[in-house]
Image (cartoon, rainbow, N blue to C red; front, top):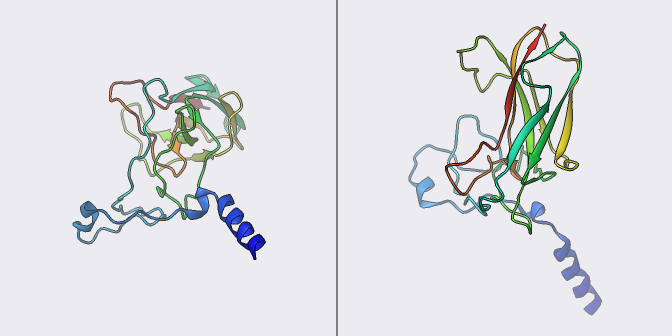
Length: 201
């Protein structure tokens, strides 16, 4: 009997926070909005209300910063030629990625023991129709979550099969474990993410 209790306690102690993710209690703010769905762990394209707290905010010594190392800005790439996008990030402990289909925004931003945000990044590539027309955020030719831990802050993602001819913008998107944009302690700061432009011909 005692052994059974011990094993039960041990089992529960091994359950990670990931196994227990669930929507937070509804806030008064969300309750007062009529006809607006609330955060439930799924992505709701029409919009929703979140009662999730922001969580842990890093100090200004631990603000994430990103640089796209390759391709170089304004690089020329051949049509339909496979190429790599190499990204370097500081102050983001990568490799922390929840299921975006069922655990979207379900955990507040968290930090590691050094005060660095736990999360991951993404690469998104969009076609630019001109130098002045803003691209539609719902339209992209390539999107990939960089879910694995980076090596010395560097990760390389292959764009298999390349791209059709055109002018493109390549950007990174830094996120928390459950996909919120990283939340920072001060307004005046450098950007967390990076973008470059390339021409495919």
